[in-house]
Every structure is written in C-alpha cells, then in structure tokens.
Length: 392
Image (cartoon, rainbow, N blue to C red):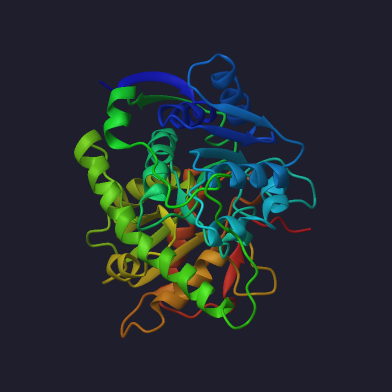
C-alpha cells in the first residue's frame, strides 16, 4: 500500500526512480539538482537496488554515458539543471534520434548570465525542439508520479523516446512535502521489466546513430516528429492507467474553476498552486476567472488547449522564460500559433513572470487578472510584458 511520508522533493524524485528499478544512473551534480544526484548515488552505494552509478566529469558526459547504457538495454535515469542542461544540449537530439528511453529529472533553474541559481524555465525552453517528451510537475506528488510514469511512457514499444520531468528548482526540489510513495509491489505491477527493441552487444552487432546524408535525413526527421506526435496517445493511456491504479488523475491541461470563466490564466510548474489561490480570491470578488495548468509540453496538447479556452474572452499566458527578440515568451508564442486558425479565440495576453526566482505572490496574480479584466478586449500596445519590472 502507498505510504504518506514527509520527504524532500528532490530526494523523492530519486526514490521514485529507485522504485522503477533503474539499472544505471549517470549524473553530474549541479545546484539545485545535486540532491537528486546524491540520493541516487546513496541508493546504489547502499545496495538497495542492483544498479550502477557512473561518476562522470560533466553533464555532457552524463548524457553520453546514459545513452551508451540505454543502447545496451539498461533502464537509465539522469538529472541536471540550468547550465548543465545547456552543456548536454549537443547530445539531447541524438538520444531522441536513437530512440533511447532515458528518463531525466530537470531541476529548472535560470540560465546565466548573469549567474543565478534560482528558478525559472530558461533552461528547458531552448531544448524544446530536441525531440524529448516533456512533462511539468506542479508539486512534489506530481514529481513522484511523473518520474514513475515517465519510464512506462518512454519504454513503450510505440514510443521509445526519452522523457524529461521538469521540477521547479528550490520552489519544489528543496521543499519537504507529505507525499504518497507507492510501494515496490505496486510499481512492479504498473511498470513491467524493460524489453528494448534493439541492443548493442558484441555477440549480435547492430548499428546505431549512423551517418545520414540528404537522401535520407529528411525522412529520419519526419519519423522522429511522427514518433513524438504519436506518443501522446500512449501518454494519455498511461495516465488513465495511473488514475485507475493510484487514484490521481493527470491531463495535458488541467482546468481549475474554468466553468463560467471569461478570463483564463495559463501556468506551468509550481506557480499553478499560488495562481489557484488567486483565482479563489478573484471569484470571491465576482471576477469570472479560471486557471489552466499545462502538464504536457511536448508533444504539445493542441486539441486540449482549443477545448479548454472555448468561451473565454481573455487568455493570460504566463511565461518563465524569454524568447529574446521574438514574440515574448515561448509558451505564449506557441499558444498563439495553436489558436490561430480558430474562428473564435480569446484575446491573448503574455506576462513574463518570476524570472530568476523572483517571487510571485497571490496578490501579484490577482493584479494581473484584474488588469486584464479592466482592459477587456482592448488591444495592448505591446505583445508581452515583463511583470513587476522596477523602474530605474
């Protein structure tokens, strides 16, 4: 039976991976991910599971080692953050092209410069086109659940793609929360032993990651895109099975108090819980506001988004990263694109919030919504706004 315990979320992420009986962990520590790396190392050193922990000299090496291990048929986990993820970038698209079902926990952190160790999403957003399935956790319970779900999704024969689970740095990783940890028997029933499609072995040689010129490269990219798009069906099926077994439901876009809402706000990650409190307060004031929480970033949930915003007059998209010189925030840019062909669509407002870990309080979310309510459908002068910028 599941047991509720008080545990730090980063440690819980490692514990969830251990429940999945990983074979290899290859991780280089970096704040605020280091507690994941340390605990994975302790789990292996203590002999709690039959696994190897590979000590590497960099994040690039961590992903390279993870790929090599996965290619031999091992169940592999890794983790990183910020500059470490940027350093991994060179090999991330290779992992997905080789269809290696690696699971990676990302303790989201602002990217330098200037140097900042606190949370935003500027590390994961540049990786959005690397071909990985990408999930966003709102709280510690979702971190545990998504880490376990990620292995089943990644290893499904119709998917065979790597998965990253995004965990807001410090705001989640270093928090102690009361979490329901599934027991080993429950996870074993949910997650079968990994049976790879092909493996590297000296007795039966195969080629992986071979050279591809222009006569086949386009077709390979098409196949990779199709695999990621089609993975959504498996993701939804895994989430349904999880709900049936463990009682916790997951959706690509989770709605909160959306009934009758004329103004909707969209969040990703841990900000959703604070924003939900703001929505409650706004409803008490008679402001018809609701909240959308995006859990699935890749593949992008086009159909769910279109359905979720029906009837709303205004959609406030919050971003925790900037597409410099572009449309503002990367999430808002994709939301606008996704809704472009809709005959009726809400006016879209883009608020860039919480950069570098800047606090966003309940009253801040309320202010954003009330400002939008006051403006109505009037077109704003700017496509996006850096919320809370201090004047010189």
